[in-house]
Amino acid sequence: MSESFDNLPSSDQDLSFGALNDTVWGRMRANYGSIARIRTDEGYNNLGLMLSDQCPWNTRIIMDDGCAVILDGPVIKQYYDALEILERLGKNRSGNKYAIERYPRAIIREAMVNAFVHRDYEDDGPVTIRAGRNRLKVRSPGGVWAPDRPNSEDLGNIRNREMARVFRIMEGFSFQGNGITSIRLRYKATPELPMASFDESSFTLDLPAISSITCSYEAKKKKIVSVISAYRGASASTIADSTMFSVQYVRRILKHMEEENIVFSTGCGNKNIFYLRDPSGNGISKDGMVQTTLDDDRLNPGRLL
Image (cartoon, rainbow, N blue to C red):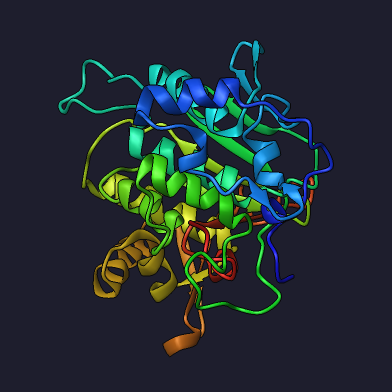
């Protein structure tokens, strides 16, 4: 696939950009023409459709109580509207030793931009956000994507390159690293572990609310249990990569967990794999979706963010 979908001709050429002008003008003092390549020699492209008042795609936010908010209009406007709603949900928790946000802005931004630049716009389903006080799930249509041929060109390995350029100009995203890794780093000092689920038709980021900043043994043990459960058995090096603890430190914790009859192991050396004695969770959900920690190599072929 030599052209990303957002650069192909739009099926609708009767487009207007009133909402986009309002969104962009308020943040950049510039009009849409200065930030987006919305036209080709053949007329408006799909990026133009994504940023137009006629944009057919939308975003759905579903709260814990079942109430739903439908965000429509230009994709970039949907992003800012969703960000505003989710930031209110992620306000600082009270009564903790440290002042922390339930969902830090940086995590929300990474998850939302990932959804909009990597989603499959040939699927007319919405980006769906299930937003609760304890968990945030961002689901985008289209599974993990990889280009037909890896491309060293700037933004060449992103599903919707023109949309990525808009977010680069508007929000300063470089897209040179891995946004999944950036999210994982935000959880480094917390007991929670972000997860990803994907199949051929969707990709979901499962982001637990940050409850506390801690380096306690119980918190680290909880992270290790999550990794072993996700992989249905994991080596010390895999656990270290997922948790960002050193391999030596992981082995020390695993030794304690073996003494507590939480885990057992088989094999030795590189084939030394640790399993949960009570494997209540596993890596395959009931609906057949693959679940994995955010450092899984399966997430990297499309260079997410």
